[in-house]
Every structure is written in C-alpha cells, then in structure tokens.
Length: 80
Length: 366
Image 1 (tube, rainbow over the protein chains, first blue to last red):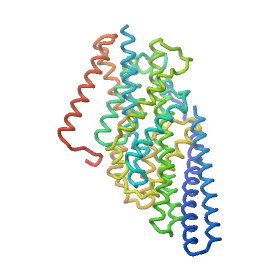
Image 2: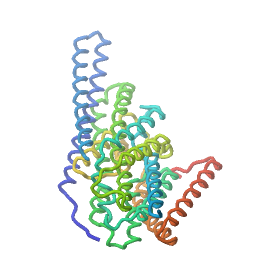
Image 3: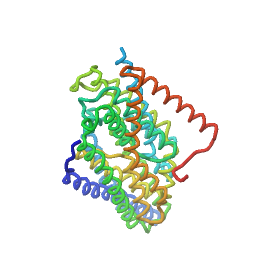
Image 4: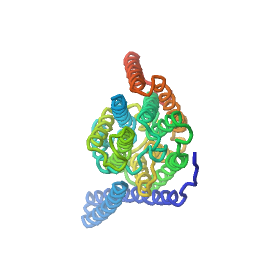
C-alpha cells in the first residue's frame, strides 16, 4: 500500500471557486427576485418608468445568472 | 465459455448496481424541489431521470475509471469486479431500506477494494488513490457545501428579506427548477460513467477489449438506461429523509442548497477532483438549515447520515471481500457467481415480499 501527500493547491482552488460560484449564483438569482418584485410593485403603483428600470435590472441579473450557470455546465462537460 | 458466463453475470450485476445508484441518488437532485413544492414529485423524478440519461452521454471518456486509481488494474479479474459490485449493491440496498442517503460511489470503491484485497492481498490496493479520491473529498466536500449553502442563504435573506414571503417563495420555486436540473445533469455525467468504467474494466480483464479501445456504444446506452430507469422508479424513502427530515425547508433554502451543491461539484470537476453527490447535497441542506437557525437541523437524523457515510467504505469492502471468498469456494469458474447472484435475487425477493406484507417503512429517524 502506498500513501502520498494530497494536492493542497487543488483543494484550495476547489474551496475558493466553490465559495465564489455558490455566492454568485445565489446573489444573482436573489437580485432577479428582488428587482422582479420591485418592478411588479412599481407597475401596480402606476410608476411605469420605474417598473421598466427594475424589469431591465431583473433581466440583467438573470442574464448574469444564466452566464454563470452556462459556464458551470461548460466546465462540467469539459471534465472528460 | 466459463469466462464469458462470468463476464455476462458481471455486466448484469453492474447494470443492477447502476439501477440501484439511480433510485438511491434520485433524492440528491430532486428532494429539495419536491419538499418545497417547486415541482410535482412525478415531474421532478421524470426530469431527473431524463437529465441523468442525457448526462450519461455527455462525457464518454471515463477519464477517472473508478477501479484504475483504487486497485492495481493489472490484477483485476471479472471475479474481483463481481465481488466489488455485490458489496456495493448490498450496502446500497441496506441504506435505501433504512432511508439513509449514503454514497453509491464510496460503496462501489469499498466493494472493489475489499474484493481485490481478498483476492490479491494488500499489494492490489492503491492507498494513494484511496486517500486522494475518497478520504479527502469525503471530509472536505460536505463541510464546504455546508459553508457555501449557509453563506448563500444568509445573503438571500439579506437581499430579499423585506419582500413579501409569497413573492420570495414563488421566485425561488422557479429558481429550483434550474438548480435541480443542473444537479441532475451533473449526476448523470458522474455516476453513470462509473458503471461504464466498471463494465469496460471487466471486458478488458476478460480479453474482449484492449485498454486503449473506445467504450462500446451498447455499454453507454445500457448504463444510461439503467441509471435513468432507477431514477424514475425513485428512492422515495430517501427523498423523504433529504427533503423534510433533516430540516423543514423553504424554497430559498432549497435553492441555496442546490446552488451550493452544484457549485462545489462543478468546481471540483474542473480540477478533476471526484466527489460524492450525496455527501455534497446532504452537507448543503444542513448548511442552509443551520444558517437560519442551528436548532432547525434535526441533528439526530444528520448524525445517522454521517454514521452511514463513515460505515459505507468498510462495510462495502467487507461484503466485497466476503463475496469474493464465497465465489472462490465454488472454484474459479462460473459456479460461484451464479450461486451468489441466485442467492442475492432470492434474498431480495424475500425482503420485498416481507415489506409488502408488513406494509410499513423504516426511516432514518427510527
């Protein structure tokens, strides 16, 4: 039986990438929910320009969320 | 002739393991979506089965063939693979029966290590591979997922905390459809490949293929079908444990757990670090619960799950070694695997009949 040191560098990379990716995904989707809700509220209050602005922010957040997820899938498929 | 009989028994057993892997690990991907009512159970299980099937086709290189880094590949025979598979199936079925989400990957590794140890002694076991592929990820993955999910849910509550709860729930239910799908896909690319690797290893050991050959299409299709079928049949007991017995989840917590789980698995995959999806999602669920309120986690249930994690490797190894020893009692031909397979099928039939007759279930709580 052979025993060897574990790759500490790889381990640390997994830790920080997981933290950044996990936080990015949850924050971006939370922003989608936040801006989407604000947009609906503004629309109900008759403030159409604010509603449009919040809707644009919600869309932007969702696009960023989709980009992060898409990159993640790409990484997974490239794993081989 | 005898060798071919053993080989086909090994292939059938590997597909049976793949099936148990599917129904055992369905819970990982869809439990949180079901418990927060983001998706209806049948829809969630159907989606998970489809994505597991698709995922199995997406990555065919089987770069980290499960046996090649764990035991000396040169010493592997179909009989050793058979012993390992029986060890893994036995442990998967036992933990499924008690509703415990243990790792199918670790069960497979434990079974193969035990069987190889019994056949060839300690020289057949690669300690380095076990430390790098099993021991370290087993310690790091759940803790990391716990931290990421905990941090995620704290940030979610900070950002959407002042919105109406019904709006937040509706939003994150939609998010869970995406996060659950991502998790199912990653499961297919990881776990179905392990069975393909095992069948490939048996074909090489039997002389049907060379180590440098491509994986035959029938191996890919049969492994993808077995895991998808197992997923669709579903591990409802484990779904219950994962989805509601560890913590009572809201949709935001479910999203945070699945998002954290996917992030950990994908970043680990990026550097070629194999992980157990079961360990990752269990840790993430606990983290999402504990960050909200430490007492929200049912630590007794969590303790049972951790005990199952620790026991998986040695228990599967013991059954793998015992199975190899038992098959050798009948000589080196096909008689041993035939007798063991028949005994396993009889035991399974008896257990199912007893369960149907008793009409009640055991859970991680009891």
